[in-house]
Every structure is written in structure tokens, then in C-alpha cells.
Amino acid sequence: MDIIFEYLIKALEVVGVAIIVMGVLKMLLVFATCAIRRISPDKFINQIRIELSNYLVLSLEVFIGRDIIETLLNPSINDIIVLVVLVILRTLLAFFLNYEIKHMPQKNIPKELKKKQ
Image 1 (cartoon, rainbow, N blue to C red):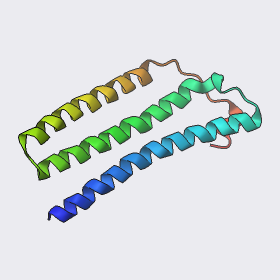
Image 2 (cartoon, one colour; image 1 turned 90 degrees about the vertical axis):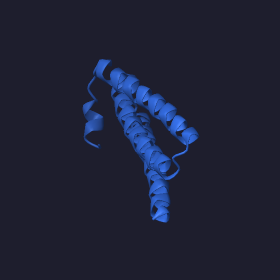
Image 3 (cartoon, rainbow, N blue to C red; image 1 turned 135 degrees about the vertical axis):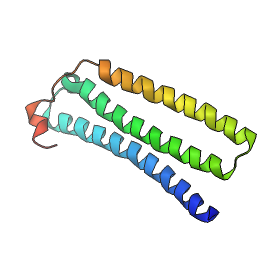
């Protein structure tokens, strides 16, 4: 049974990293589109930050789940303390990312970019 959980932990690590990579690639694609079409990304930089932050928050949630499963397999007091600290730090990071997303001024994506997305 432990081998299944070990594979699950590794899979969750891969999923968390893949989510971050997808967000960064999407951001780079938008910037490349701006460069090709000679559009200033300043017009909608906040929208890009919001989307990237959403990817980061989702990946943090996946990593927290992975850490919980990993600690359930090795429930020593040191592992539990490390888990608590990691969960608190990641939860605070997710909270502040969400706070920034909600309080960031919204700007619309130019029509030229909406067609391709």
C-alpha cells in the first residue's frame, strides 16, 4: 500500500510543477503575441498577473495535499511540525496571492489578443 502512496506523492509533485509551467508558458505566449503584434503589454499586465497568480495558488493547493499525504505515511513529530509550518506558509502565500488578485485594478485584454486566446 505504501508504494501506491509513494507514486501518488510523485504524481502530485509532477502535477503541481506542471500547473506552474503551464501558467508561465501561457504568460510567455501572451508576451510573445504582444511582441509580434507590437502591442504594449502594459495595457493588460494586471490581467496577466491575475492569471499567473491563479496558477500559482492552484499549484500550492496541490503541494499542500502532497505534503499531507506524505506526512500520513511518516507521522513522526518532526514531520508533523514541518508539515504544519509548510501548510501555514503556503496557506499565507495563497491568501496573499488571492488578496492581491481581488484588489488589483482590472483592465481589459485588447481585442487583438482575445481573438487568438
